[in-house]
Image (tube, rainbow, N blue to C red; front, side, top):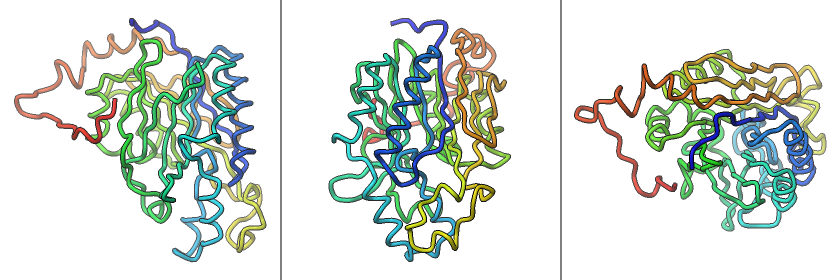
Length: 305
């Protein structure tokens, strides 16, 4: 199937109902409907949007967060399972694809940082688990096993994800280039000044569109019934995440964003012909590759699709 010239993406910088799965999924369904009304083909949500990013790990003494972890684990999502039924129904009703950042809970209890893809028929079409959690994240999430480096085909457009600092892993990026992606999704919690230049570098390096999407959260969004919440979180001026949502074209030019300091959705119609135009000068897996000197081998366990 040949890719359409225009492919519309909506990157949703919203505030989840922190550590409340069902209420956050209601937000997801509302955002899907709004993005679809604006003509989106794909709606993208931030890292671990459901049930929220475990920010307390960076503020709490390690292993003294049993109540926080218990709620986080309880509000995570099992796949397969009924938790995503309302999102699947919303995607089908709107006729759009969804890439949703979640914390996935396996039957054993292990948690993964993941992106789940839901197609425009409401079916789960793919899953990517973050290869390596960063720093304190390792206290809640395991290294990705099973579905990794997944690429989905959306009407001829190949889409893959790298979550947050996975985007700093050169071989992970190269693997997705080798799989022929057109669009790289980069859901993240990174609010740093260096993050947007990272997205721009990747767009130029891979000659792909890059969609970075971040949540917007303040200390006041944290439920106060969690032990010690008042001690480690302030109010509306205590930012957990200010946002950094940005859409970048092949070559590194920003086409939307960055969105910082509030909720909102960035939308852009991606002119996919720009990919081939950019690769005339630099094609990382084509004429600008030297397989006689350098090559990448992807182990079969990580080569899901």
